[in-house]
Amino acid sequence: MISALLLAFRQLPDPKIRGVLIQSVLVALTVLIVLTVVVIIGVGALGATGIVWLDWLLGVLGGLVSATGAWLLFPVVVVALTSLFTDRVAAAVEAKHYPHLPRARDIPLAEEIRGALSLLAKGVLLNIVILPLYLLAGPVAPFIFYAANGLLLGRDYFQSIALRRLSLPEAQAIAKRQQGRIWAAGAVLALLGSLPFVNLLVPILATAFMIHLFEHLRQRGAF
Image: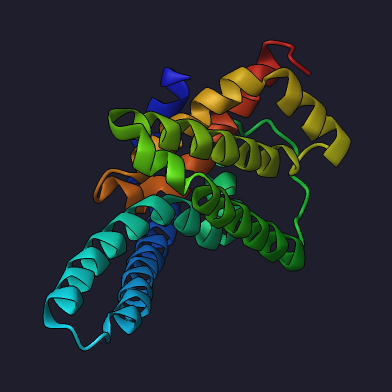
């Protein structure tokens, strides 16, 4: 798994990926700004009580909620929105490291959009549902965050890569057999997604990372 991640990082300067990298960064920054503004406006709308000290307190809490909400949702939202770049990144990775592979299945744009919206919805819902655990768990909260989002990101990203070359039942069967390894890979992606600036690279790194993991499992005879 470590070698797969290192290979993903090493290919970032690849000219074939540079354009995608710039686009994904712009999308990521836009999403971060929109997320923060939406949360601030939403919380600010609750602060019009007319009581000075209470409005001030709600304003402070609004700022904290805005920052926390953006931090929690940012990785999943960015990965979902920029998953439309998957094919371009995957093609560049395979051309460099796996040139012997036959042409992958062309995934229709509608299917890509549907997958992105599905990941987005599941990610937002997951973090809303377990938000109370974040608040109550104290120092354990980051581990809950990485475990929960790792399960989601690992499964969905691995399956999106597997579907380029396998049927849905085959991809799901492999993901089930290798769920521990895929979960760990997803946790790494969730961790990277929570790091400033590094999180802007997550969609590209995730695609390359999962391709290397997928091919590693293939070479080991996992399927």
